[in-house]
Every structure is written in C-alpha cells, then in structure tokens.
Amino acid sequence: MKSKLFLFFLLITWLFIAPVIVSIVNVSAVYGETGDSGTLTDTDTSADTFNVQIDTVVNDIYPTQTAKFLITINNTLAQEDEFKFNFGAIPKWSFTTDPASYLSGVNVGAGKTITFPLSITPSSDALGFGLQNFKVMFNSKKTGISKEASFMIFYRNPTPPVTKYQPTVAFNFDIPEKIDPRQPVTLKVLLDNKNPLALSDVLITIRSDLYNIDRIVSLASLEKKTELFTVNYNPTQPPKEDTITVKIKVGDVEFTPATKQIEIIEYTDIPEKKDETSSFFKWILSYTYTNNGNVKETKEVKVPTSLFMLPFMKTSPKAALVKDDNGRSFSWNIELESQESKTVLVTKNYRPLIYIILLIIIGIVLYYIFRSPIVIKKETKIMNVDNQGISDVKILLHLKNRTNKSVEDVKLVDRIPQMGMLDTEFSVGTLHPSKVIKHEHKGTIIRWDIPTLEPFEERIISYTIQSKLKIIGGFSLPQAVVKFKGKGESVKRTLSNKITAK
Image (cartoon, rainbow, N blue to C red; front, side, top):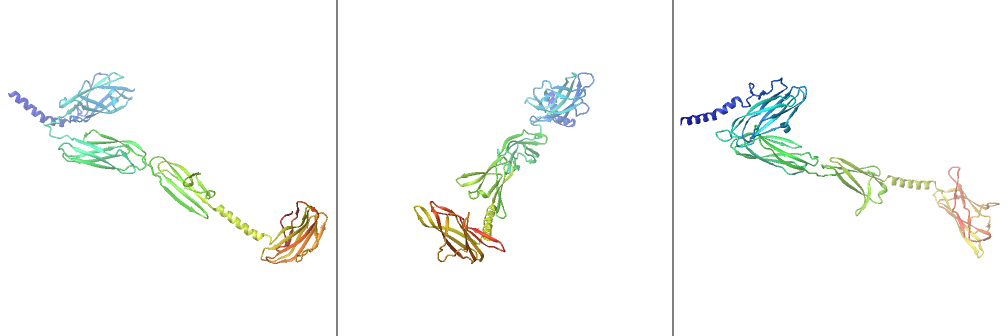
C-alpha cells in the first residue's frame, strides 16, 4: 500500500515539476555545454572534414503542431562533398526539409556552409508525451566520415492537467471567382475561436500574385468574427488566373492555409473624342479613340460621306470607301492595345472649288474688261437659186457697240471671193462702201468707214454678190474684219464668224 502511495506521489510531483525543468533548460535540445546546439559525436577520429550544427527554432509542441530546427553543414574540404543524414527507424514522426530533396542528400561546395530548415511533425496518436530524444547520423560521401548529432523535443499533452489552452482558430474566406479589375472587390475572412482562450494577436496574411495584405486582429473567447478586406485592382490589369492564399497565425502557431482560384476578366471600353478645327473653307475633323480596356481590341470606325462630298474630302490614315443601307461612308478597322490611343483625320477642303469659282469670276471680269467693244456677225441669204445652182447671195453684216462708250474711227472690211462680183445697186437705207478694191488674187475688197459708233449702237450693212458661175451645193465666205481706235493710238480689230452660203 505504501509503495503505491509513493508511486502516486512521484507521478504528481513529476507532473508539476517537469514543466518547470523544461522552462529552465528551454528544452531546445540537449546540446552539450552550449545549450543551443545539438551534441555531435564523431565515428571517425581523423581530422574534421565537415562540421554540423543543429539550432532550435521551435521544440515545444502539441500534437497538432510542428517542431522546427535549423541544420548547418560546413564543408572544410577543398572540393564539393555530398552529405547524407539518417534519423534511423522513427515511424511515429514525419521529417521534412526545405527543399524536400535535401532528405536524400545535400551538396555543399568546397569551403562552403549551407543552412536549411528541418520540420518534425508527430504522425501517430500513440506517441508518448514528454521529452523525445532524436539522433541524426551525418555521413560524408567523399571521406566516408560520419558524425552523430542529437536533439530533443518536448511533446506536450493537450489534455488536463495542462491548464493553458492552445490557440485553435477555424477559418475560411470568400471572394468572387470572376473579378472586374475596374471595381473594388471585398474579401471576407471568417474566423472562429474554438476555445475559451482570448487571442489578441491573430495575424491574417493574404497573398496573391498581385497584392499582399497583413492584418492583426483580436478574438474574444469562443468569438466568431468576419474581417472585410477591400482590394483595389489596377483597372488596366490584363486578364489572368490568380491564386488567393489566406493564412492564420497566432504567435508561433500557424494553421493550415486556405486557397481559392480567381480570374481577372477581360473588358473593353473605347470612347470616341471628336474635335473640329476650321480655317477659310477648310474643316479638319479629328476622331480619337482610346482603349480603356485591359485587352487588345479592334474598333470599326465609320464617317458618313456622299458622292458630292468625295472630291473635297481626304482621310488620314487612308480609309476604305464602303456603301451600306445608310449610304456611303469612310471606314477604318483600328487595332488598339490596352491604354493605346489612335486618331483618324477627315479633312473637308472646299478651297479648290472656291479657287475655281474665283478664277471663273476673274475670267468673266477680265473678259468684260478686255473684250472687244464691237461685235460683228455675218450672215447670208440666198436671193436667186434654180436647178443649175446659186446665182445671187445677199450678205448681212451686223455691227454693234456693246459698251456704254463711243468707239471712234471704225473701219469695216469684207472680201468677195474671185467667183463672185459685187452688185453695185445697194438697198435703200444701207450704208454704202467707202472704197471698193478689186484684187487679182484676193477678189473684191469692200471697206466702210464709220467715224463714230455710239454706245450700244447697232448697224446692219448689206450688199449682194452675183456669182459668175452657177454654184452647186454652196461656197465659203471669208470673215469680215472691223478695225477701230483703242486706247491711245493703238488700233484694234475684231473678226466676224465664218459662214458658208448654201
């Protein structure tokens, strides 16, 4: 009976004293005299070709937590060496390194030192609680030398008589799967404190390819809370898929992360900006298009026109001319990258038309300024014709001053071909010739002298030609000539029309 009481007493004493002992020695590991490095034992007494050190990061854990250590290997050789380490047969624990390939061997350069993390997680519910001793054997491939290091983990019992609650937080988060980068996005993190322990330093970490957010919040005993995060994306963010990862950490306790896939959607927005400038019958229309979207887009642009307007319109860059139900129009297919702007110009230029009209007006004005003040028109009337042909032709000369000024010293000259002769019997009221000259080659030349031709005065002078032979079909008559005094001492002349008697 006494022995049973004594054993019970020892058990109670151990339960109260063990935590104190652990806190005093920091149970980092039993690392020889230093207290912060693993104990090393050489299995070969030759000179050191490498050094190994194990430093404790976390070695006081509960069943849901992970112990963490840092392993440092120093290669003192003058050549690269590969080191392998072996934990022996420990089936109830899981060992991982970062990177994971180091579990199968670590290459260390000549004279180099490498440090990497070692994580140890309990993998069985049948583990005993308390101090756990581990031994690791490190082996050099080049020299065959092995070294042994040892460290300890204090594996705590989460059930009474432990009086301190271990942080336990359940969480999840919500974010839309399709995201328009132009709009703010709300990310909700739902937290649930699963035990009575109040938590003042709950770290929420949100990671994405596009942003990082950290926030520290508090949780009351058994409290449920929703934390809202507003994410403002770059409006020009191109479409892409992204992974959102949310982590919760309380002190040294880090819970399993939650992840969710989202997609940044594509959108297009190409507004039109129209400007117009003008100067002296010339208008320049400027159409500017800016792609405010996040993807490349092709914009079809049409500017109405018409057949009448085409000669006066020009485009830059050159447009295609299309015709549809709405009529004719200039058309462009403009390719725009995200945030790119392009401008098309349509020029309406009526200056050539104005210049043509001005030239016509100037020509008319010059015509009226420099035209001959006297006009003469010649016409014929057949007076006698029979089956044998034409014998008599009457010539009428219409002479007119078409200005409002008198014309002085007017001389009218006409000519009769060799085949005809002048009838000297002139009609009553007609002006008789001043001179009649018969020329051997030119025929008969008739001249009338008119001293003054009053403004807008018109005279009709007639005479008759008798043909020496019967004319069949017709014959041509030469042009009549009017000579008159111009400005100063100059003499000007005007010709009549050509005519054929038939």
